[in-house]
Amino acid sequence: MKAKHSLFSELPLTNMTLSNRIVVSPMCQYSAINGFANDWHLVHLGQFAVGRAAVVIQEATAVSEIGRISYGDLGIWSDEHIEKLKQITEFISSQGSIPGIQLAHAGRKASTDKPWISRKQFSPDEEHGWQTIAPSAIPYHEYEIPPTEMTLADIQSVVYEFKLAARRAVSAGYKVIEIHAAHGYLIHQFLSPLVNLRADDYGESFVNRIRFLVEIVHAVKEELGKEQSLWVRLSATDWAEGGWDLEQTIELVKILKLQGVEVADISSGGAVSYQQIPVEPGYQVPFADEIKNSTEICTGTVGLITSSKQAKDIINRAAADFVLIGREFLRDPHLVYEWAKELGEDINWPPQYERAKIE
Image (cartoon, rainbow, N blue to C red):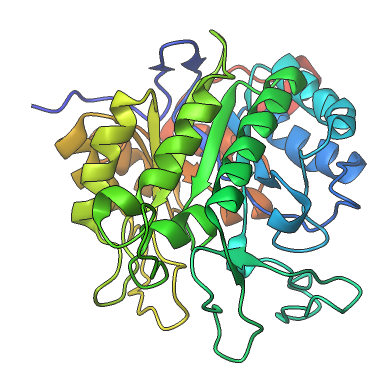
């Protein structure tokens, strides 16, 4: 029988305790220059901590310059990136929230424009472009320049980049280190048989296709201390015939759990442009529920969770251990206060905001 918890009950992990079950999902801001964070990122992320989110996870942060989705993405490929990131983590921590970072490499989906300008992927000879890499030389859209197929040396180089990025993340003060293995970015490209057409030790079979991620997990885990928790974001399915699916995700999570991954952050899609996603409120929750039941790992769910009632129901029936919220936090950075009010919960407001607590 599933244990019953509430949206505002604590969630104990091995090295930390979440103050509630509401987590800020990573959301790209496309506002960095050369990977460096600035005051936009400090205020953007800091407002969620003031708003009492349990964990604030920073946007997909590139482990290498060519791993960025766009030229505006945050990066952590250099020690020089640490200083501003440390300011961000210190502020988040000062408000009682847990600072998290999502380490990422976009692979063949890199070298793009900022989305509010265009959806264009730049060619390597354009100002904001570079040559992308992937497990196989197949572009995301057929009209784009194909990525370069990674050599074995390239693969080991990226594994090492994740390792160094994790080391820097720990130095910068992040407590949650999340590896981005979803949404059609590089690690997911290795997982999906629709994208990975390799015939070597990193392709064809399930064991070979997960090898890249398992090696990254091992490398990252070596850099974490007693204050960190290792999370992995996964796409539970490609939403395309013959692609990555829930059954494979469950088997992968069992392996990752043994490797020291504490939390599975479950999303879906993104591997191929012809995916068919039946989008509706909470459409990804059943994946998290099934993975949680099958592996007994701590699980988060994301995707069109827009109300306190919906979030409360997910946690009450233990379909996931916590919810990750994206767009609703953009609409209302203090939605934790609002949801607590709607559900009749009393939470610890910062003293500067106490006057707003009184009706």
